[in-house]
Image (cartoon, rainbow, N blue to C red; front, side):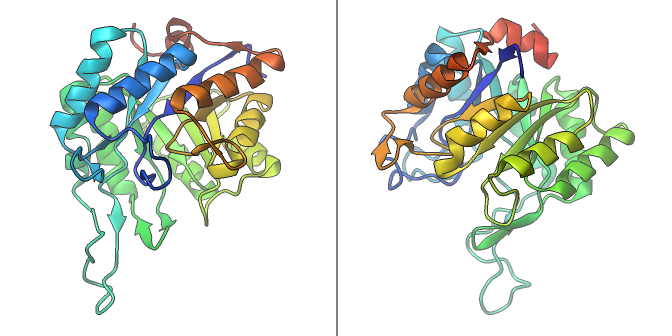
Length: 292
């Protein structure tokens, strides 16, 4: 088990809506405040997506990312910022002709998906390695696209966070590390509970963790009702943990969480009751090999 455990809070994500949780942060101010709330509760890392403040739909607009980062940094310069590059990889085959993109398609060039990373240079940039069925669409992250994004992320001075949803994604990461496209020690996040990816079980998380490079730093989490159980499995297996409204809206069965802060407080309490110590942002930076 880790002596110092890094808590990441994913405050809003790409798919959760206010139908799932009425307090889901949507505007840049709400998202920034949610990150600050999570930091107060013990999170060392904030995982950030942005939304169109008018519609609440996922957005890739640089101005929203910039406002979120500036609002956070005005009040907290220590919190580690992990900014997504996930949006832009979804393909929705149209009903009449699956070769033609349907209205939910967001596919864009890999360079476009990391423009905000180049501009803002966050501490960490998520790099999804999954090509898989995701809901009623597919997510496409080809090796060539991943290479382009990885090179730009590294060139911006950010550290890629390699999100893996199945065993093949870990094998892709291994190949990219051998090729020098990715740098060691790598930072991984094991995602469980997404349908047709890793299921949220102890055996699966343990298997995934064993497949990682020996020098890797990793976080594990589960989606939905398995959020806290999988966080504890990650801790017991030697990893770090992630919670947040992106992954789970509930603090207990049938009880909506008050917000991201309460989710962080709960996982912190569980870790400390098991004898773990929560890593402060400065210690987390050292552990992750981030710039000071």
